[in-house]
Amino acid sequence: MIESKSPQTCNHGVPTPVDESEVHLWFAEPEALVGEQALLDSYRQLLCPEEAAQQQRFMFERHRLQYLVSHALVRTTLSRYGALDPQDWTFRKNDHGRPDVDNAGYQQLIFNLSHTDGLVVCAVTTRHALGVDVEDRQRNTRTAEIADRFFSPSEVSALRRLPQREQRERFFLLWTLKEAYIKARGLGLALPLDKFSFDVDGGDSITIAVEPPIVDDVDAWQFFSFCPNGRHRCSLAVKLVAASRPLRLVARQIVPLRDETCRAFDPF
Ligand SMILES: CC(C)(COP(=O)(O)OP(=O)(O)OC[C@H]1O[C@@H](n2cnc3c(N)ncnc32)[C@H](O)[C@@H]1OP(=O)(O)O)[C@@H](O)C(=O)NCCC(=O)NCCS
Image (cartoon, rainbow, N blue to C red; front, side):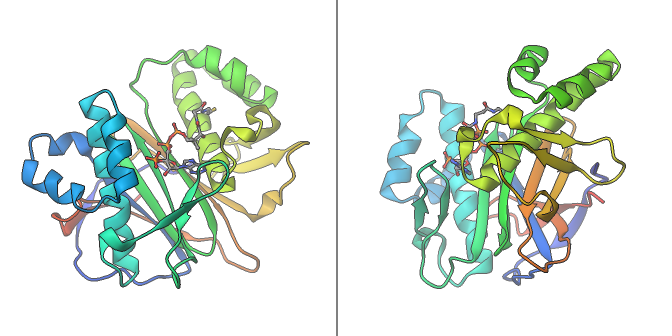
């Protein structure tokens, strides 16, 4: 398992090269932008009409802000890798709602988005299927009930063997890994959550086992999990294309369109 160390400062301002040996995470904090009207207006300019309409549908302002910052993050992040302006990215959705880049010439640019209270993250790589999930570990959640209902029997028994004080942390570790995996598969909750199991007790590496009806090449997967701050946990699932070596994770925190000096996590 991977834990974050102290953030460092890095200079950033040039397009990030697409490096097939790396996977990148870009974090942003919506709550830090409350009241930043000019910046938020510039984010609104980036949304397509469907995104703008979706953003207005949320009942609570914090969800409208989260959606706005998330989608500005996705668009500005993609423009770090491709020669398109942020507002020019177009997306197609699969039958389960997974958005992917639709622009000609950029369909090997793979991204996935996750948002929760206080933090949003966009993961980017090329060619490899990928899913990311971030959760607020401080939120009020009935962890034991959810685990019993949704986790696999082996995950539940490993969780219950832990001392009580460690069970909540294990819950969010498994939850984010499970979400990251179903998002990487692009199938959402169509994938039965109790038919795949994570083993996180094997030292440095996280492994997955699947059972019918799920079919998968389990050895092709690389998983990462870490806490980018004291409140959140983030997990990432990457299915490596054939003959690919394990990827290096690079994680950064930014303010889209403003903060080109980014806070870089060194989770390894
Ligand atoms: C929709 C789902 C894919 C992710 O939901 P989530 O964890 O609430 O949301 P996240 O913030 O992590 O991800 C949402 C983003 O993922 C992307 N997304 C949507 N459907 C997706 C799919 N099928 N596959 C991959 N990514 C998807 C979108 O970009 C979406 O953001 P947007 O709606 O602002 O465009 C699905 O897994 C779900 O509904 N989960 C519910 C939570 C649950 O019961 N989890 C049990 C875990 S044990």
